[in-house]
Amino acid sequence: SQQGEEDPQALSIQEGENATMNCSYKTSINNLQWYRQNSGRGLVHLILIRSNEREKHSGRLRVTLDTSKKSSSLLITASRAADTASYFCATRIKGGSEKLVFGKGTKLTVNP
Amino acid sequence: DVKVTQSSRYLVKRTGEKVFLECVQDMDHENMFWYRQDPGLGLRLIYFSYDVKMKEKGDIPEGYSVSREKKERFSLILESASTNQTSMYLCASSRTSGRRDEQFFGPGTRLTVL
Image (cartoon, rainbow over all chains, first blue to last red; front, side):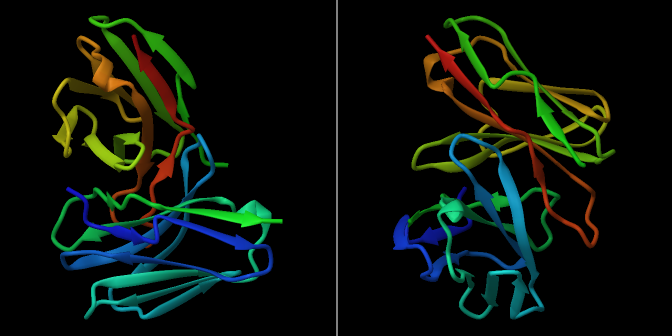
């Protein structure tokens, strides 16, 4: 079953602009993670935010988490053509096992 | 540098064949996972293993089995391949819950069943 749902499904922006992607989930979580996937490749972990955190930064990435709304956002600032990829949120459900539940992803295109 | 490798990047098989997909990790991770990825459906968990010889069904285990005889190796088996198993298969591994909770992914195997 799909826990996380990303929004929008696709996003196209110009280099230098900011990109914002959202993720909503249904059940209580231990943490929420964002992954990136370049076309036809495996996923790469970007950032993890725990349920007791509200905001986290890593380089040009900023992640927020609102557990009352069961939602998270990923902001990529000053985007580059190399940021073109699909981005997935994944949740570790509270009381669950070691598995993560992935959303369907947002396909980001950054035009030079 | 940590690494998850998968035996093939591309594989073409015929309906009814038995198919083995191999995954090896060099990080001494306890947990290993097999996902399939299809357009519009995202990643769906097939099986995972939290220890040698231990396994647990994911969301879509039908038509698949797994084997984990050694900690570093996790195999996905399609007993009798069917065309609806044409997909991208991704293997991942992770440490049992700790500060670093992320999964590390292999490059994927694109399987086509004719």
